[in-house]
Image (tube, rainbow, N blue to C red):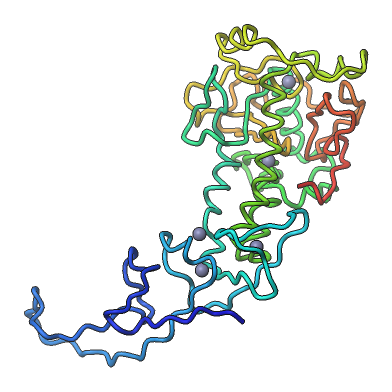
Length: 367
Ligand SMILES: [Zn+2]
Ligand SMILES: [Zn+2]
Ligand SMILES: [Zn+2]
Ligand SMILES: [Zn+2]
Ligand SMILES: [Zn+2]
């Protein structure tokens, strides 16, 4: 095994990887000789001086030169030899080196780095586009607005799930197990209706590779995440730059043609109306909320998971105001797939000839 052994016990040899961080309390703190009286000598009775333990050797994992700014390595946990995830071809470590039989080793502190950043990117309930520019604190987030029709359908499905009137509590698809928050009927009145978040991006692309998963190195975790963000960017491009007919699948179905991009002038006109992207169904979305925290119905364009915040729903979408919650017999417009509250995704991507998410057929290996 390739451990980098460093001494942390001498005051002249603090490893520079951890020099920017406060000294840890695990014995790596340099033991200074009390050669001069301390500036603030305690006036009380002298506290018992603990007998200093010999400092253990400081192990550093191979990601640590990159991660030093985030704190020292976890020196007590077993290090993991990174095995590149399936689907990531020939990944390099964060330092740019090839994976080998004993490289890189990672510790579970470094494996956590950027996990929160990625979670925030995928899960922020922020409007992506308001006119030409992204708004909110995280310009890369995955969510966007839907049109009035799609919001109505999705809120209807939401209330059906919360009512518990459909086969909704044991969603059948494999990826449903990765849903951030599947809404179930509130237990005991008057419990508030729960948040729905059917995004699977964090559970599919972030946590499986962290310290609670396979413990991959920075390079591999970033490579997996790049696959997800690339897919998100590709859909952003379609919804931002295509004609409505292309997104609705009409060009593909009726003319056998590829999608058509809009002109700069038409994009400018969309943006003047506050629209940066169309709804994934091809209609114009509802305007972004003035306060991003007030977004009540958004969709993750990477995984098509819909997020509904019942506390923010306008009166017309509250349960008592929705006249019809039936979803039996409903089908998607183009692919003619069943719409079902037990399905994680009911928003079809009509520009695709085959949409693996729609109709309950999503596969577990979707990266
Ligand atoms: Zn790091
Ligand atoms: Zn480390
Ligand atoms: Zn729509
Ligand atoms: Zn997602
Ligand atoms: Zn790796």
